[in-house]
Image 1 (tube, rainbow, N blue to C red):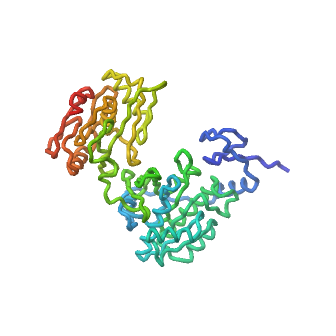
Image 2: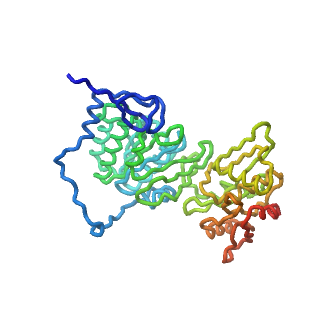
Image 3: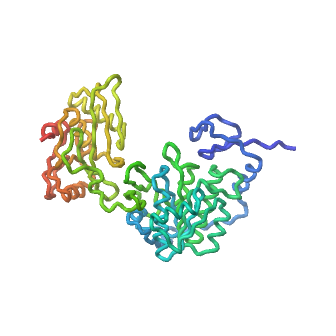
Length: 451
């Protein structure tokens, strides 16, 4: 009798190997390889087998294919509709990830309540909380409706049976890692289970034309727990960002087959739950006089300009100089500090430098470079900057200040909020209502920066 071959599988990425390895050669995780049982190996062979008699699809010229019309409906949240590209798409499979306590379940329960109140049946499936806990949150959110159904279940087959008995307009799964399928012999949350369940839910969404939202746990490095194939299979991937101790939350799209990934949604956590942020004017900067070490700039989050405050602290180092930043890329900070030492002869190598972006927002574009430099110089010289001045520009390694995208939109935003002066690389041709100072070099900015 032939001996059963041994097979090992990585629980992080799903890579299989005939021998055990301390470190997975695919994803680099340590102690992630587990030995599969004979039943598991048999199951993997069965799902991987393809019948040689299967008839393939017939290729067609792309010019003969009619464009499909995307059917959308509103979620009841302006911010979520913006991120999704205009609303929820029927038959879509959407994955939402984020840190524990950031508001994933709160948001989707509120959205489920909004849609249920629009006469659509919604099924909220929870594998982590009891019905009493969900009802308590629903009372607080004002999401109660006769069309909102709760199901506490982790068996996928039982969930599918419930879906087949009712005509649901939307389904929420909280969370994908807690479910298990009887078709897969592995434990809940394993690579094989998540892969199998996601495929079944994707097929269910496309067959029944029902939008399904999945809540996903994240690992300590901020990525969705489970196999990477999970993010490839779904139609949309959204991430919640922000500090759980801060009232603001940012929902960012990382993948969207039905729209752009450039838009972000901004929400506010209050006693009534997670709601659309109606006004973010004063959320990221203070209108009072700036302290030394603070500067103002405008960043673009999708199509939305946001005025933010950049804070810097420069102090003498006792030992090795430290560089730390919150909300700004640390490597770019090191580049800007090296530029200041080279161009302005500042001895920053003997100083600690700390950068902070208030409000929990993260800067993902280089337009804030000039404001970062202005805040560093302000803290270094202990001289405050004008609270009526906006710094706008990307700084190159040679000290050149370059123009940023959507300059007109940014200037229109600062005009709306009453700012008087803007420092940037090129003066706009049209009158924008603010006094613009154009300069192409960092050294020239310092001459009148503190006026």
